[in-house]
Image (tube, rainbow, N blue to C red; front, side, top):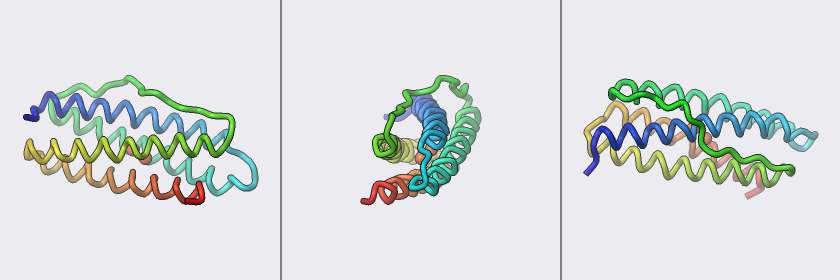
Length: 139
Ligand SMILES: [Fe+2]
Ligand SMILES: [Fe+2]
């Protein structure tokens, strides 16, 4: 059975992944230069800003629940070639989608409907990010 403590711990893990995603997108956007990647680079900057916005929102939710938001950063991935970078970003988004679905289930169980809605809004953006990356990879 879910507890507020479990929920805070899960949200803090999500926060650490959001920081990592923002850092990874900043790095990839800067490195993935070249005419064919110009539009994709701009898209990665948009993603970086959205991941930071997610981090701010999740940190506020943690604080509202009585927790202390983490300042740890999860694992980042970098690569030398563009396709590997985009694959790394896609893997991150697939992880984020799974993570938020789990957190939404816990919010529901705890009847934290306000936070559930905030998490659903983040999930919608993670799914958009995943679609953007699939399209950038030509899938
Ligand atoms: Fe995010
Ligand atoms: Fe994302």
